[in-house]
Length: 230
Image 1: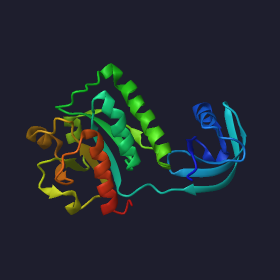
Image 2: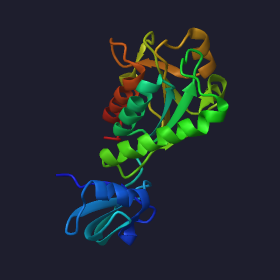
Image 3: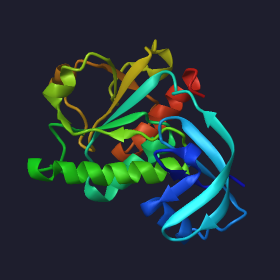
Image 4: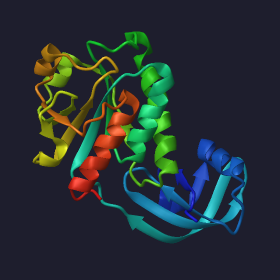
């Protein structure tokens, strides 16, 4: 059985406090059990719990590991889905290994984020990313960045792979760089004019058209299998 993961700035201290200690309490973590602490940036420590309460969990560090960052690095640019699908999109992307997530306000995005509410929405996505990373036993927790528009996305000087149903290039034929931006469009798709503004390479995964909430998961799995990430 896999050990439960908890996030803390200093895993080698063998100590949890605050919300993570409360989470451990809810999961009924008790003295004598082993759990894993991670800083979300590659460092993990396995501890045997010696004391546990709602306020604090303390344990003895019995092993620690520094997990290297995945290569190539993959940033998921996710067109903002409707609210009921946003949580699923983030959850699946993190499970599949996204290193960073950038919300994208595309031309056909229905769910608009007013500027004054963007920070709150990003916080929601970040909380979901943390929860998914812990569930997936990840040593690296992806950061959710502030949203970008299409012109901002077009100015990014990275290898941009745009999942597109009309693409002629299969993802299996792509020459991957070390820093990939995987662009996921909205349910309404990406028009020719917007694709030109993005300036990326349109690629397809297969004959099926995926929903925006699951497309990043499928794309990341393909990249994982085709590169040294897996």
